[in-house]
Length: 279
Image (cartoon, rainbow, N blue to C red; front, side, top):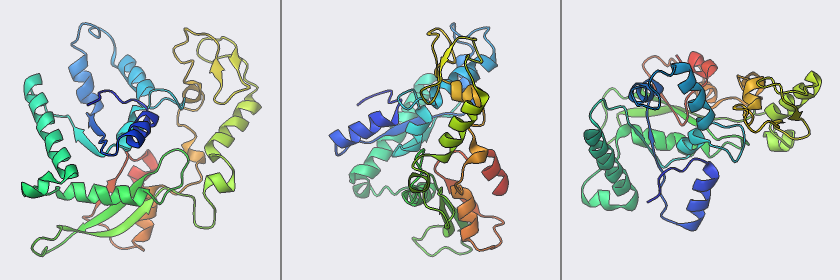
C-alpha cells in the first residue's frame, strides 16, 4: 500500500507496473480541512487566506511535474469523502471500512458477500465512461444527467440516464491536438505573455525566464515562482477554452427536455459557468 500519490504521472506509472493497482482518493471539503487544521500548533494564529493559497498551490500546480492532487483525485478509481465530524479513531475506522468495501467491489469478492455498488457509484462510473470520449490535452471530464424513475422495476436503478456529455471542441472542430497542435489556452496565454513584454516576476520583481512556457521566476525563494501562470491568469484562461464542457454537452444531449428534478453526475468539480448553466 502506498500513501501520498501527488501527481497523475505517478499513478499512471503504478498502473503500468501493477495490473491490480487501485487508486483510492480521500477528499474533504475545504472548510472541514481548515477547521481541523487551524487548531494545530503549526497553523494556530495563521489566517485562512494563507491556508487557501497553500492548498491551491498543492492541489493544482501549473507545472506538469508539480503537486497536482486534484488531478489525482480526478483519475482515482474511487473517492471517499472524509467529511465526518468525529474523533480521529472513529474517522479512521470509517475510512478503512469504506476502503475495504470499495476494494471488495473491485476484486469480485463483493459478489460473494452480496455487496452491490451504490446507485450513485453506478452513475459516477457511467460518467467516467463518458469522459473516455474526450481528447482534451489537460483533463478528461464526463457528465451524465439522471431522471428519477416514478416506479423503478425490481432490481433496476432508481434513475434513467437522459443525457451524457464530455469535454471536447464543438462538432465542427477537431480536438485541440489536431486543430492547433497544442492546447488553445496555452497558445493564447503564450501570445498574451509575449504582448505583455513581461521581464520581471509580478510577485517578487525578480527577473523571469520568458523563453520557456510556463515562464519561471529565477528567484529560488519566490513562493509563487512555479505558479506564474496562476498569478498572471487567475482564471486559468478558461474563458478562452474552445471546448464545450461535459455538463453543457450533457444538457444539449437532452434536446431541450424539461430537466426539473434531475441530477447531474460529473467526474470533476464544475466551473462557475457550468454550475450556473445546470442549476
